[in-house]
Amino acid sequence: MKAKTYRIALTGLLGACAVALSYLESLLPTAAFLPPGAKPGLSNLANMFAAEVLGPLPAFGIAFLKAGFAALTRGGTAGIMSLCGGIFSTAVMLLLFRKDRKLGYVGIGVISAVCHNLGQLCVAAAMVGNLSVLAYLPALLLFGVVAGALTGLICRAVSPMLRKVTARFQIKS
Amino acid sequence: MGSVIRVNAYGGTQDEAQTLCEAACDAVQALDTRVLSKTASSSELYRLNHTDAADFPVAVSSELWDALAETKAIYAHSGGKAALASGALTSLWGMDTDTFRVPTQEEIDAARALCSDDTVQLDAENSTVSFAPGQELNLGSTGKGIGCDRAAEILREAVTAGTISGAVASVGGSVATVGSPDGESSAWRVGIRDPYGAANEYFATLSVGEAFLSTSGSYEKQFTENGKTYHHILDLTTGYPAETQLVSVTILAKTGLQSDALSTLCFLLGEAESREVLDLYDAQAVFVYADKTVSATESIRNDITLVNDAYTWR
Amino acid sequence: MKERKWISKTDGIVLCALVLCAAGCLLWRAFAQPGAVATVTVDGETVLQIDLQTAADAQSYTLENGVRLVAEDHAVRFAESDCPDGICMETGAISKAGETAACVPNRTVVYITGGTANDVDMIVY
Image 1 (cartoon, one colour):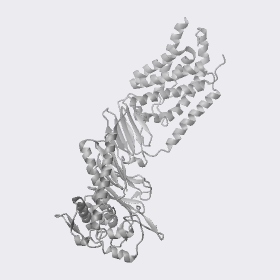
Image 2 (cartoon, helix red, strand yellow):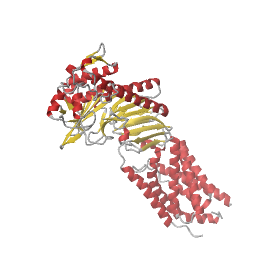
Image 3 (tube, helix red, strand yellow):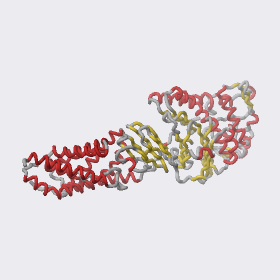
Image 4 (cartoon, chains in turn yellow, cyan, brown):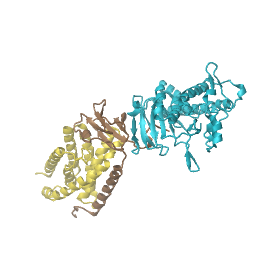
């Protein structure tokens, strides 16, 4: 199999994983102490891995795929919010994986999760034309730290295995 | 009257609102210095009080005559506790000039003799006034309300013209609400001053439509002499500040003058004896007692929210 | 190339900073006063103001966009909305100054203000 074909296939697989994780999360009830609609965002795992190993195009591709899924299942508003959060956090992930050597997986996971929430919140504020929704920011920050750390840890655990596979197909990260 | 005048207009452009507020404030100020003030030598009332008794009856402006007549009419329900001609006694206590002192019993007795409204003649037909030598007419307890009436007049014109959706005016604590905050049916929220709190603190909120509100409270203009604290609401039957369990009475009435006069009257009469006159003027009242219990006339009870936990319904 | 760490010292600093920042905000919010007025905006325009201090018995407000709000027990909540995820209704009742509930698909926000002296139109004294 050619490297390019493999890359496309893997992107598709990761995208499918992301969508599946999104769906599973949507089944979870929201805990009382969490901001309404807050989800752990485990599907960011796919973005994170793509950002680390596959490069910008697959990473953004997955963000778009997730947004499309959100739009189909939860309406256009959810789609736009997912898109903006996804693009912002993916961009930050890419940047951190490329340029930064000091942060660990947990750090990158946390920062990208927080960026995801921030992106969504800003879009929400713009859409409703009212800054008062930023009141959710502290709770979302706190939640983003927990969820992001979890994502980072899982990514670190899974990453070597996936890396091994990709190495076989000479995919350069 | 040396009162703070505040006007807030809603629903217009900032410039229009600003202009309007200034116009309303100026009009109230002018009314005071031109007509109502007891102490400013420029006012009609001052000149009237300083008219030689030989020249009575003397003709006055309809503005002043109406104010005098209605004040007298309302205080006629006081059983002698309040009067239009209370000036001799309020001057004696220094109430008009904020130079308080406790007079001697002889001084008080002499001044009390001059405070009866029976000798005050108001002739409607010729718009004239006469009273006994030594008497002083006093609009101190209704002037703020009359100011509110004047402000409300100007503000109502602006609401009718569509310049603003509504406005709220305060003349020395008496409040007039005109129109509505947003041009729809929403109510105004008026806070009732906490008698034991700072000037910007209120113990209850009252939601009202268009209304005039005044409060008389013993917390205002207090002074202490020889360890005893005196307030400014004089009972003419004793010549001393009223002895009462009440600390404040707030009235909601049809005009500013009525609300202002009735708040003083009801403070002097007490809750039970106020019912009749409140009914007569179709006015509502909130009574606050020294033990921080509160009562109110039936029809506004549900519009009142106690926002300070220390206060409870009676 | 050196393997990226699971967790680094920098991670720790970032984590602590974020947690402290968020916790500070939440702590400060915990002492918020019960609010006096709920303001409802659609597309950024104020369409309704509800006096929460007098809102004891349930009162229902239906907005032009079909969203229904209920004010009850000095708190306000989204009671009905055609949005796909129903997050606005999940938010539940809000009552403290600074609290917000939003229905983004319907561009509708409810936020609570006040609880202090500037909260009345005028004080009578």
